[in-house]
Structures are given as structure tokens and as C-alpha cells.
Length: 374
Image 1 (cartoon, helix red, strand yellow):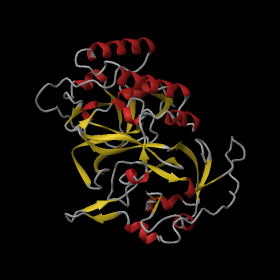
Image 2: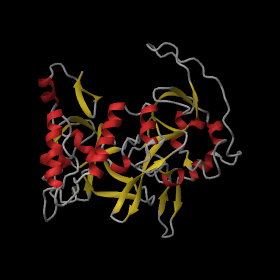
Image 3: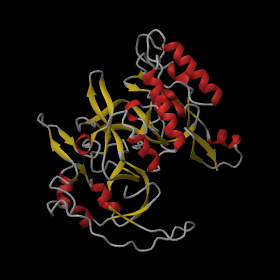
């Protein structure tokens, strides 16, 4: 590991990075996207190591996620703004190859004074074959049907990674050693994987009893109920509720039981799945970050438009604690919410709970995201 979680790094110059890229604007299969150049020369802390990630594939049961392994890659706290990719609103966390960064020492933990970083030139693996224009050109291409398709880090993950089996214990060791996860979270994730895949929890005959026992145990310890329950709509269309939420508005996520009333047997509402990773946020209050109406399909590179818009909540992302193949993935993708799963909360209501409140801040505690008022 060249860089660990919390390390200060400096993004290399545009010229240094171009020298590492091939004629398609990629390094070890991973694209360097045009919007990343705005960070060149700036210094940031490493948010997560990205030795493991997840990618969408077409499986026998439809679209699914698989775990993949990367080499020498980290996440800083930057998300793609979609400007160079048709205005995609997914807000994916950007991948940074170690070769595109250099260490920046920090003097004084209190004031975070950063002295000039030592200059080191990365290996010119691209042999000068890439230019800035090539990086821009690589963001789109024409499909056989004539449609414009997009190429970004998310669409190229399968090419930039290798297979990673769920039972490869190295990923759990790396999750702890890298600083991505606490030992407690790693152990809890392993226990969940063993329970989900190694018990009768998915059995048609014994599954209900197994899930009931899981919920009783979690209730005693203040944990999250079994997060993969079927919805309660047996037949007919799922209900829809349009709140016309705007960025900055406060909302409370409804209880898990209330949300199950809006889901079909596949735990989805109008095509959008209520993923297990959404369950820990039930009952909490957040601000709306954005409405999501269009996004790039990772599998095809095609821009898709949502028939029923969803919203992204500020600070609410996948924790990868209940994700099966994606367990402990550090990609931190934003979670999408149907408006019927949310309810408006007024600023006055929050102020009454905590007098003098001016806003919300989010702090991670154990597996839950707790909301504090400052």
C-alpha cells in the first residue's frame, strides 16, 4: 500500500499524469477523466483505499453486482460532476491511481500546514502517447445503432479490475489493514455473510423463522433488522407519491415497515429496488442533495432517463455491510430514494427538538449514520 486512509497526497501535474496514459486515456485499464484535471496540484486526504470495488454485470437473474480487485488505487473525497459525460447525475466516487498522486507531508495536526511536497516523476508507462484532447475524445463513442455512448471509470471497471471471490479472505484483511473499516465492522460483515449464505434464511420453508430470529437478536443489541425482506404488495402496480423535493429540503426516511408497504415481492417500487444498504438509514433525517433523472448505465455506457425521478440524500451512501458479493466495498455509491419512502421535515420541527439548531451534520457511529444538530 503506497497510501493509506487519512494520508495527505498531492495530485500530480497534468503533464505527469498524461505521461502515464495510453492512447485511450487509460492507465492499467482505468480512464483518467477530463474533470479530474481541476484537482491537479491540489492536496487532499485519502478517503478510502480501493483495492476492492464492485461492478454491474448481466447475470442469469438480471442485473447484479460482483466484487472486483484493483491494484494501487485510492478514493479521495471527490465525486464525478458529470459535466464531461452528458450531465450524468449519479455522482460516483472518483478512482485515483497511486501513479497519479504523490505524498504530501503534514506539519502540525492542528492547523494542517502543508509544506511543499518532494517532486518525483512517475513512470511514463504511456510513452507520451496521450494528449489532453485524447482524454476528452475518449469520453464518448458511437454505438453500432448510431447512439452516443459514454465511457467513464464506472463503465470500464470490468476492464480495469480482476475477479475477486467472496471467500477470498485477503479482502477482509485488507479492509482492516488499509483503514477502510474498523475491526468491529469487518467482523460484523463476515458474520452477516456467513449467516446469509450459510443458514436457512433464504429457505422457502425455514426462511421466515430464521429472519424472525435475526430480528429478535438485533432488537436486543440495537442493531438493524434483517435488511432483505420481500415487499407486501402481492399484485398490481406499486404506489407512487410525488413530493417534488428540492435540493436543501429536510426529509425523514420512513420506517422499514412503512416502506415495505410500498414494495412488491422483489422489494422494488416502480423498477427501483429498495436495497439492503438503505435499511440502516430508516427513521433518520437528512437533506436532499439532488434529484436524479438521468444517469449512465455502467453496463452499456448508454444515458438512461428515469420515468419516475428519485432523489439522493446528502451524506447517504452505500456502507456495503449487507451487500453479499459487494460486502465491504469502499466505493460508497450514493443511494437512490423514491419520494414515497420519504416525508418532509420542517426546519422548525428540527429546531424544536434541539433549540438553536441551524443545520444538520452526519456522523458515522458503528453501522448506523446518526444525525446530530449543531
